[in-house]
Image 1 (spheres, rainbow, N blue to C red):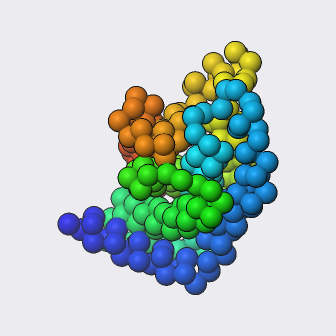
Image 2 (cartoon, helix red, strand yellow):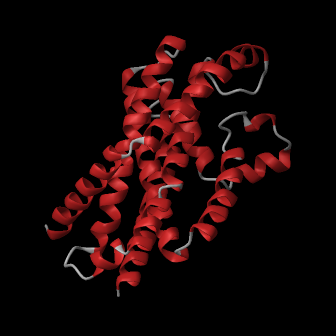
Image 3 (cartoon, helix red, strand yellow):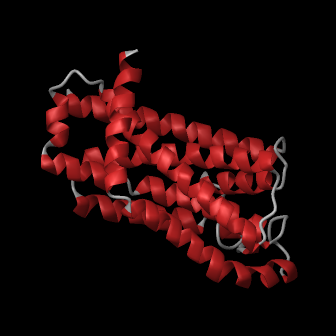
Length: 254
């Protein structure tokens, strides 16, 4: 019970900080909206005339991909916040309190997940006037899937930040991971159009399965193999990153 109580306290503290400075929340909305407004209309004739794109219209292809991109971007870069707290001595002061070390991770990651969900819901609603049509059940499952992905990425980001303890080291590592993961996930262009070697390389990227699954549920294929595999991959990522994060926070607090 102490872990749950401490997690709730850390969550509340982190949420209050975000509400006092909503800059990153706004940025998280604006960037995907620009993709909707500027890239979506260009994608419509391409999807209609180019073989190899996933099933569905342009918005059923683009919007799920933008949600996954939001989960990746919104999760991987949250480590900067804890680096600022580490540099200011906040983390050091928390270490001498009886608060659970697991809660220090989970409370922050849950806050990031809630913020991500708000952004994802707004993005989905904004996509409707553009032409998105998807079953409500599929949209809800897709949002949950993106939330699990964002939670996993937030845990990984905090664990990495606590290990490197430096913005100068943290940023290059995140960028080195984010760019190839993004390009090999099929978010912007279908990997079925790629050369065989590039397609085979993309199969190693777990996020490609999450993208495929999100698109599948937006089509209503909730029980398809594609959807189930993507959901399983997201859950495994969450378990692995939580384990990594907990071990890191416990070791750093020892």
